[in-house]
Picture 1: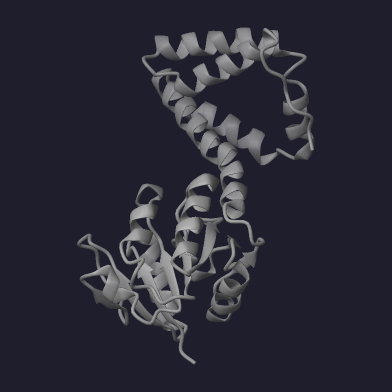
Picture 2: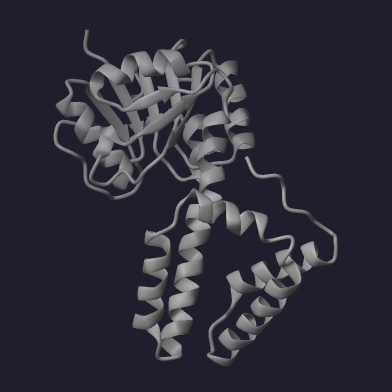
Length: 264
C-alpha cells in the first residue's frame, strides 16, 4: 500500500526529504507559503488543509519558531490517527506542548531530531524519534529509507539528546569563528588555524577528561588567562562574546558560585 505523506516546509531539508520520499514510492503532498521550488513528483497545495487530506504521516520541517503554527494550521484537517512528526530543532518543552496539542486532535505525535546535516544525505540523515507515535513512525518511514531510531514514547527526549550535543558543537563553531576573526586581525590567521587543527585532530577521550577535570583546580589561572584573552580581542577590534562567557564561567567557579559536575 502506498504511503501518503504530507510535508510542511519545502526549504533545504523539506525539499530533499520530499524528493527522496517520491523516489521511494511514497505519495507526497506539500505546503509552503514561501516562493520556493517544488521537487519533481510532489503535489503542492495552496492551503495546508488540502495537503494533509488522507495523509498517513505529516512531516513538519520548519523552524522552531514556526512549529506551533505548522501544527495548528491544518489541525482539523489531518485525519484522526495520523502520525504528526515535528522535525524542528526545538526545546524539549516545546515538543511536549506540541504533543499535547496533537493528542487533543487524535494524532500520534513524534518528536524527530535530525542528528546530522540533511544536504547530501536527505532521507538517510540519521535521526531519533520519540513520542507516542515513535514506534509506528519508525515502522512506516524505515522501509521508505529513513534512517531513524525509536527513542521511546516520551516527547522531547529526542530533542534533548540533540540539543545537549549542540551545546558543544555549535558552541565550538562559534569559538572557532571568534578565534580566527581575532587571529586575522592580528595577522596570525594561518598559524592559529594550523595549530587548532593539529590539536583537535589529535584529540581523544583523555584530552576531554583533562579539560573537564582540570577546570576547577586551575580556575584562577585560567580565569586570568581568559581575562587577558578578552582584553586582546577588544584591542584587535573583535567583540569577545564567547570569550566573555568563558571568563564569567571561570569567575563563578573561582568564587565558589558554581562547580564542575562529575565526569561520566
